[in-house]
Image 1 (cartoon, rainbow, N blue to C red):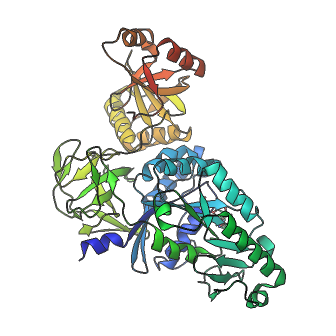
Image 2: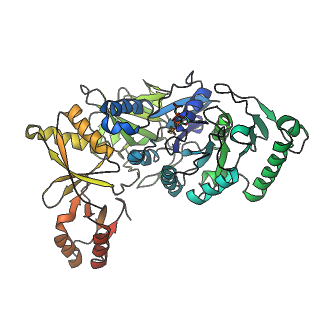
Image 3: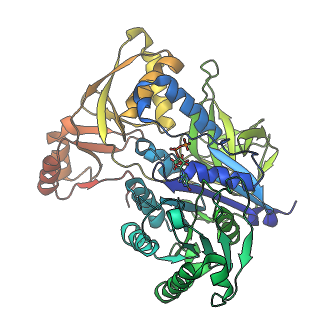
Length: 528
Ligand code: G4P
C-alpha cells in the first residue's frame, strides 16, 4: 500500500443544485460510468416532495434513502471517487452547508431553461467564500433553453464566478446536434437515444476543416465556428491553478438524462479536481499526507430502527489512515475511542473496512458521543473549523406534552440537536426551550421523531422572533450590563452556552444596535 498514491487517487466532492436541475440523474450517470450500478433508476432521489409535510411515512422513507445516498463511492480510471450527497430542499440547507465542509470540490448543476436559481445562489456563495474549486454543468440541452452566452453571463453575474467554457453546445433543444469539447478538441454527436450508452466521439483538431460541414451541416458549422471564436475572445484560457484556488470555473454542457456530455465532464473532473486538500484546524493547517490520523464529524444520522438507538457519525478523514480497532482521541471530551466496525461506503452499500485514507468518509456507530464538528485524532488536540450556525428563520417554544416523559424529551431534543436537525436556545429568564429551524418542515420531523424514537410528546407555541444574533460584550462594561438587564426577556443561550439576542423585529434590532453601540451583535455563531 502506497500512502501518497492512495491520497492522490481520491476525489471527494459534492453536487449542488436547485431541486430538479438534475443532480440525482447526473449522480446516477456518474455511477454508471464507474460500473458501480448496472441500470438507470438505481439511485433514488431523496427529494422531499411537497406532500411530505403531512406524510410521515414519506419522511421516514426519505430518511432511509438519505442514509443510503449519503456517500456514494466508485472507482473510475483508477480514481476513487466519493460523492457526498447534498439535499437540495431549502429546509435542509444547513445540512448541505455542513456537508460542504467535507468536500474538496463541487460540481454545480444548472438547468439550461431555468438558469441560475435561488438555492444554487446560496450554495455557490458558501463555496465561493471558502474558495472551493467548482465545475459548472449546464444540463438538459436536449430541451429548449437559454442562449449559451446569455447563460454564461448569468452565471458570472448572479453567482459571482469567473467562467470559461470547456465545451460548447451545437444547437439546442429540437436542433441539438451535439457538443464540441474544447478541452479534448473533439465532437460528440447527439443521437437522441443514447440514454444508457457511452457515446463515441469524433476527434476534431481543426475546426476549420470542411469535414465539419459534412458532419453537422453548413449552418451549424458556421455558427459553431463563430461561437468558438467568441469563446476564445471573451473567456480566459483554462488554468488549473486558478480553478484549484476557486478563481476560475470551467463550464460543461450536456444532458444528464441522455448521458450526454457526462463522460467529458467526468474525464476532465478526474484530471483537474483536487485530491484531498489541507484543512485548517484552529491550531494549524493539517495536510493529507501527514502520518497521524485526524478527521471530523460533518453529519450524524440516527438509526431508523427505534430498537437500536445508535447513530451513524460520518467522519471525513483529513490526514493519516483510519484503522479499525485502533484507539483514537475524541478531542472534545478527551476520551479514547475504538471502533470495531467502521463503515466504508461503496455505491449504495456500506461495508466494514480495516483501513481508510484521507478523502474517504467512514461511518462510525455512535451511542451519543459525537456532535457535528467534533474532531477525532491520533492524540493531537486539533479542532477543525466547521461552518458557523446562522440565524434560523422560524422560532417556536417546545413544550412537554407528557409530564411522565420529561427525561426522554430532554434526551431526544439533545440528540436531535447534536445531529443538527435544528438549533436549540434556552431563555435566560425562565429556562424555556426554543427551537429554531430553517424551514417549517423540521418541526414536524422533530415531533415525529421524538415520539417514535424517544417515546416523548411535544407541542409547540409560536414565538415571534425575527432573528437570532450572537452577542459579544464585555462583562465589566456598564453598557453591556444595562443591555443584559433591559433585554433580559429576549436573551437566550445556544447549545454551546453562547449568549444570543432574539430580536422580535428588524426595527428593535436596529434600535438595540443604536442604543448599545459597544455590544456587538453577530449574525453567525462564529466571530473573530
Ligand atoms: P434533482 O436531483 O436535481 O432534484 O433532479 P433530478 O435528477 O431528479 O431531475 C429532475 C427532473 O429532470 C427529472 O424529471 C429528470 O428526469 C429530469 N432531467 C434530468 N436531466 C435531464 C436532461 O438532461 N434532460 C431532460 N429533458 N430532463 C432531465 P422528473 O419528471 O421530475 O422525474 P422522473 O419522473 O423522470 O424521475
